[in-house]
Image (cartoon, rainbow, N blue to C red; front, side, top):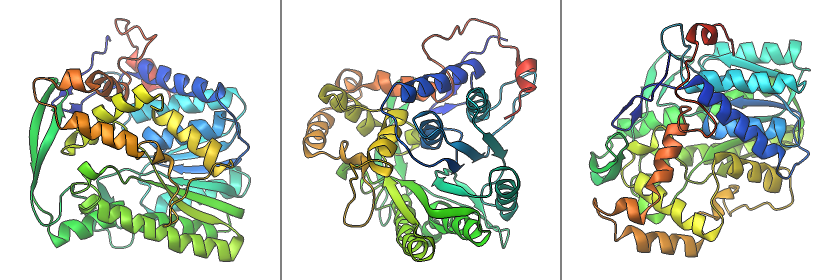
Length: 398
């Protein structure tokens, strides 16, 4: 089957298995050719199949540490008629590449929020992974969470607080700007979003791992957050998502004290930079801000994609001597994005953008390319006219 991208509005409906493989290989080659570091050797990554979670796994395994890794993710399997999700193939190709170099790469596919998944992972660590881990990376991104004790299902809501907000976003399919309005959050929206995207589940994982005695002395855990620019503040940091991120960051403070006192360990939130994600097109203002940011940072020679940004985090900060931490204990690899000169120039461009000139004033081409590459399309070196044997692909296991 020749697989062509299917896009509806700003939603990608399919993935290209071979393109996903090349994308994983390109990230591996990047970290191999970059500065290496000596870090954790046994790592568990929650949300390991795409974005910053996948980038973390690749950096830790191939960027100097040569870490054995466990990845947990929730992905859709393909069959002989249609491909699976991009993350399904990312897991497969990462495992293949890691095992070729003698590394352990175990994938668990399922609900990372469940007690059953925690039990499975802990059993594997005890019986087949050497008995303990050095690092837990928490990079889960989900809009839905089932409470593992009550069974109640919670759904996060991207909404501002107090007033509705209207702002521009992209229709990737039509390559156009559209206005999107979000109504103000209810108290229930706020509570549900914290329940899904706050720190409760991270805390449950750390408690389960420490109580099972499967963490090393000096064990570290890291979760990812985002703060962003002034222009996105009302919809992001001061909205329901921001409330959840604040809960995550407060959880880090509690976990850090607990781990430090008990095993000399640590817990921190790392504030990451803006990148294109599957959900970013549905946040008013953010996509347009990101395209201007890409342009400005590229001109200044400090633009980074997800793998470069994540590898710098581990090389310079987590396992290096160039730590950047703010007064709230958050690690700040986003400092390049938040530089005063960067933000000033972004806003100078942003205020002049219209529906007619946005392609000239921004790096929309980069935004769309990044969007397509999330699902294995528009990757250099891939023949997209070639047949893909989906029956053969369906036999591969992550």
